[in-house]
Amino acid sequence: MVDMAFDSNILIPGAFISMNDGRMVEESIRSGRTLVRALESDLITMPSPSGGHMSAFSSLGPTAELGLVPLISAPGGNILSTYPQSMGSYTSLSGTSMAAPYVAGAVALLKQARPDITVTHIRELLVTTARPIADSSTGLVSNPYSSGGGLINIYDAIRARARIDPPLLSINNTRREHPGPINSYIRPINAYWEIHTLAIQNTDSAKSMRISLAHIAANSLTMFDKNGTLSQQLLTNQTMPTWPTNTSPVPANTLPQVLGIRGNTLVRPGQSTNITVFIAPPLGLPESERWFYGGFINFKLTWDGESTAFSHVVPYAGFNGDMRKLSVLASAPIGLPFLADSELEPIENVSELTISADTDVYLAVALDLPTRIFAASIVDATNTTRGYLPLGYSEYVGRTLLDEAPYYTIPVNRTVFHDTQMTNSSELSAGSYHVHLKVLRPFGDPARESDFQIWDSDTFKLGD
Image (cartoon, rainbow, N blue to C red):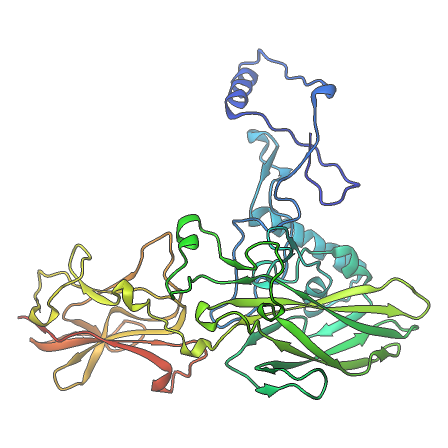
């Protein structure tokens, strides 16, 4: 017997046998010759190995420009649920297909308890009443880019008597509002930091609410090794390098910090107050290693006459560095971008290349980061742009995936397009040309040429 529940008071039964035994039982049942029985004394109870932890297959954030996703987490590993009757009626599965119904049911309960609640309020409560998920391998909690606000906690969401706006903080250190030492509220430290104001409303109509603040640091994540190339750990076993690497103590400056608080910590019934917090990135981690950090601002709320504190968390996450300065195009050691032949091998002497009707040539491009604008055009000998390559213009292009094609391929031939929808085309005449590629950096302004990363090929010829 396997206890698959997250509540120790609830037992959800399940059973496991080997694949071979399972096939034998299945064939015997179909033949109508077998009755399956199990002695109760032979059954054992064991926990699901992934219970209470983030599943290894769970997708990670952030968005291309550091938006905090996912918002919350829900049970989705080894879940016993209904199944088509023709396939056994019940089975144990893992994935979003298991977690999504859990969230839908939780929202239905919240809507039942509070019929007039808005979608915005539902989203807010699910995030701030969730519970950060422990990571036993580091001794901290999972990064919000992995787990959002944490494990959904519908019981606390229904009972909540406070609202927090915004319910989460997406931090990009390229918007450093207050460089320099913080000396007005805590001990001075020379650091870049961000200031954020959170509005907290006491929705209890009869009791005053008191606020205290705690901080929960989370793991930091990266995709890169110290030399700036993609992590070998990520390439070999598809797991993200984390900091800390184990449960041993680490220097405080290698973890993010919430450095201060100001505002009225006593809130009358039905009233609101603004709380200001200061967030510093993990200054002890080298920016060259491209760490994504995060944590949780934990507001502990108590009401008059009550001794038990009610916890609301505000997850925050960001990038330890300046994303505007990062290369979108894959690192130079990989050798990309390049012009490739029909076998997608690099063309060694592009300056001697002549592309004719029976020549297949491609632009091969790998992206380390997503980009909002990808534009590959062809330029003539007078440095005049003649149009986009076929498939040469796209918006919101994802980074190159490790487990699929290692790069994008764009045909290079005499056909060019004069609009971004690729509907108006023409044929180029013979002559000398080169490929001009530009990709917009994170947070870049499409109207500012300096916000693009540029690459130009060597000059080649288009034949008759």
